[in-house]
Amino acid sequence: MYWQTSRFRIDLSRPQVMGIVNVTPDSFSDGGRHADAQSALRHCEQLLKDGAAILDIGGESTRPGSPGVPLEVELARVLPVVRHAVGLGVPVSVDTYKAEVMQAALDLGADIVNDVWALRQRGALDVVAAHPDCGVCLMHMHRDPQTMQAAPMQGDVVPQVRAFLLERAQALQARAIAKHRVVFDPGIGFGKTVPQNFALLARQRELLAAGYPVLAGWSRKSSLGAVTGLAVDERLAPSVAAALLAAEQGARIVRVHDVRATVAALAVWQAVQEQAVQG
Image 1 (cartoon, rainbow, N blue to C red):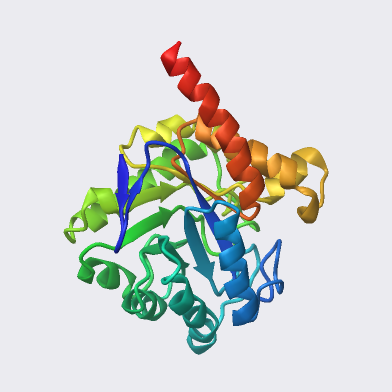
Image 2 (spheres, one colour):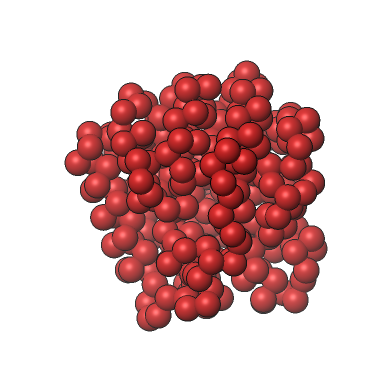
């Protein structure tokens, strides 16, 4: 199992850790900490020292209720960081839904497009289809960031999320985008209730049955706060627990803020898996 990206074929035989680099003043958990390019660059380097296998760089917050960011602002935030990160020897992902940002980042050598809109915005699918190898993460989002939690999904979300992601994958296949370039993200917190988010974790293997690797993004999410009572900056333990549970349920990539702790926890989990196979 692998994920083909611009410069790297990422081995998915074991879970890979994607480190989050928010070049934003207003992200829900670390907004402003790495808002300037120099701070973001140092953060990239620290995440790699901590064991990140992939860097995910984003210049616009998609937290519930967040306003959009003008194109020129997002480009100014993201491109200097991407330009540096592509020289660090690991796959670089750009977290954006804007076709212009995707194209500019790919032109600089970025490897992955990580899109909360699953390439539904104007021109996004065209950019990815025109690229020979870039990886793409298709995420499920109900409604949009401004309204998704005001009127969350109804009913059993697991088949709904699976059907949506398969429909988007078929749209990519119709544009000759190879299946091994695509992973699915169920979109934890994006228009779902707390029970629905945990249903997606408990039944994650139903999504895997669609035949695509799953990327899980539970780090510091509000659902973890809802069941623990912990503030966003206190959610290290539940975030690591959720990452391990996602790996146990078959996720091949975990997208996290706290790379070092997650890598260490996954090393223990992996050691148990190897002994189980041998025994």
